[in-house]
Length: 178
Image (cartoon, rainbow, N blue to C red; front, side, top):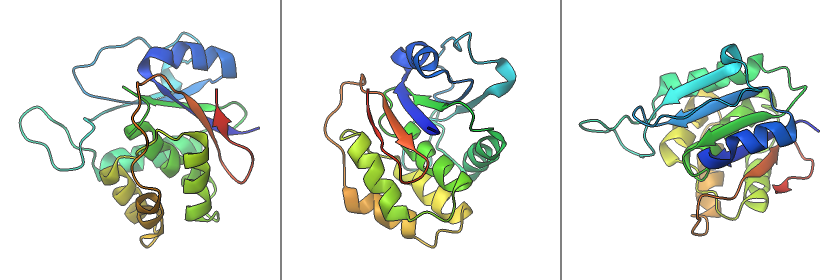
């Protein structure tokens, strides 16, 4: 089953090994250091430096921007989908779920945005996709507001402790937590 595994930073090595992921997208603040799991080759790892904010940052904060979204789309379209794609951020709650939605729509653009977002909510009661990433993904992918509206409709996720990885299927297959 082709899927996207979304995880907090603390569980990326475990999830990469458990699911046989060979490719990974990291959405981390510039100053946050971490080690890429050995099973992910450097050339199949996309590191995007951004903070988890929904507005243009000031000072050291880096807001997600259209360049980040285009890099997610390009990387995902190059993914062979033989093994799961691992996407992570610090907690696995905001940036990475937003990136997972963008990735899923970039490889299966014909799917219904609301059905995709409902699968996200079913897979993770904690996911609260970053609204800035979602809006830019909606724009770049030409969704005409459907993705942003769908994400707004599910509201904020439950409070999370940053220890709840989950799988999002790319189309209407079963999704779930681990």
